[in-house]
Structure formats: C-alpha cells, structure tokens
Image (tube, rainbow, N blue to C red; front, side, top):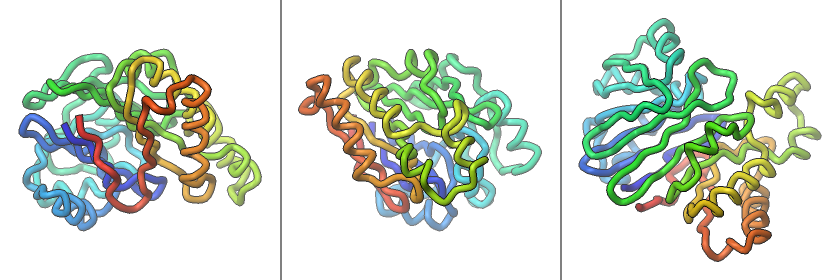
Length: 258
C-alpha cells in the first residue's frame, strides 16, 4: 500500500492511497487540474480512481469534488451527516454512500474503517485503512484526540496526523479572536504540542512512520511541528524508531509505503 499527500493545508487537502489494485483519494479539496497533475506525476490517471473518501465538508476538503465528478464517476464515501451536506449543496456526480463509524468497508482488498473525529462539521471522520501489508490511519481536522480516535489509531503501522498550529504563534498572530478561539477549541484543530503527545502514544503502540499534516501557513512552520514531534519521541526514547515527515502545503509529499 502506498500513501501520498497531494496537498495538505487550510488551503486544500487531498491524498492518494494505492493498494490491491485500487486507487482511492482521501478528500478532494484542491482543483481538478491540480489533482490530475499530481496523479499523473505518480503514474496514475484520473479514471484510475475508484473511490473518494471524504472526511468532512469544509471547502478545503471538498472544493474540487464537483469538478472532479464531472469528468469521472468515482464512488463517494463519507460519514453520517456529511452525505446530507454533499447531496444538498455540492450535488457531485457519482454515487454517495454513507458510512457508519466502526463499520468496515471493503474496496477490493482494502479494508476501510471510519471513526468519528471532534470537528465543527457534521459527520467528520478519520479513516483506518488496512491491506495485507499493514494498517494506515488518516486523522486530521480534530480539536482533541478522543478515546475513539485513540482506539482507532493506536497500533497502526503508519499514520498521517494533524499538527495544525503552534499555540504561541496562533495567540500572537493576526487572526481575529473568534477564529483563534475556534481553532484552539475542542472542535477545531490540533496544536503541535497535542499532536506531539499523540505521536508519542502512537510510537509506544508500534507506529513507525508518521506524517504531520494540515499545517497552518499563518500559525505554524514545518520546523516547529517537526521539532515538537521529535522532542516528544526523544523523551520516550523512540526517536530512532519512528520516521517523521511533514506534508508540504501545495505539492506532493514523500510517499509512505507499507
């Protein structure tokens, strides 16, 4: 199984998961042109996409979906509540299937299990994806790491987790107070420190590859996110056991291969 982020920031999110003869997108928050260009660079055509997994309906995760589904007709999967918003406001082409958290979905040989995340969007979910080569978790856009998220993520071989903001940069930055409160809330986004503590628990459970994702362009830096995570791992004596990468904002990231 191969996992690659195509874009990862508050401006747009999209990732490719390939395995067992299937090519699946997680979110489609960038333009169709950028999706196609990124897929072509990876040797994948748009018509090779068999499904799109939507985490939630904020525009940086579904902005490219209407145009994408004009040209191809992938199956679209999402959490309970997200389907209503998609059907009413986006009306994408392709069949929309609502998923229940904890219930397994099989796309070819890939087992996909959604889990609920704490975010201010109805039906917001993360995904655990299992192949014969291992298990991968995709978990961004969450204000807190709930017991449900923890249970779904622990023990994964690899994970893409949110490390959205440096709390001091957020507090002293240019955003209005209401937006600062929303980002730092339990239904907002994970700070570097919270993400780093989560990364440490993942490492304790056996996770050996981590990608830090959805970094804010205004309230974070790759260096700050990476430093917080590796410091947490160092305190646990796991810095040599876990590979940490930071997903780029606007281009293809380094591939995770399971």
